[in-house]
Length: 263
Image (cartoon, rainbow, N blue to C red; front, side, top):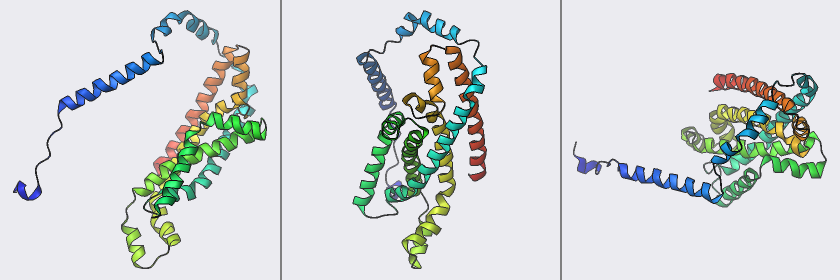
């Protein structure tokens, strides 16, 4: 085949460009560490304190688990409610952020800016703000997790929408389908498995996030983390860590099985 008809053949990128990239990346990381005084030798200089802390954690205070079980269940409920509310509010936002759904550029960009604002605020800061507004209760944690969930679900979902097959959408437009029919029968069937997967993924993240929201008074197992750390009861801290780990692993396995059925 004549290459003149198809244009020049692509050239292989130079290895030197890759090497220079690695050198530049290493230099940036090194300079950043120097600038913020992140000295790795500090770990070795404080090794005695680290060893004392680890030793004080053993054996774990297993009896503390029974005391904290109601708070752990509260943490799971907070994560479930926060994820569900965030899922509901993320549905209109994810469509407004997708360029292939709404052609009004100002509307799409404004929606994306609002979504970026939600994603910028850390969940712990959100919990602290709503704890001051709503009082030190699980409600503050639920609201914080809801806003946090919107940022994750809507972000991942609108990117999935922009990568769907446009063939069914063009066919529906040709037969005169309106915008709602276009979304319901052309977009939703293509993104539904991904959307459910993102919701489950967010629920897993929220379990971990809800576990520490109690540090700012937003309810859940975090209250017991704060209490144990305040009294330097590191054996109780280790018991809580292991308890949370088991709960997270179980939820991860359940979510994984559900995603395998959907995708």
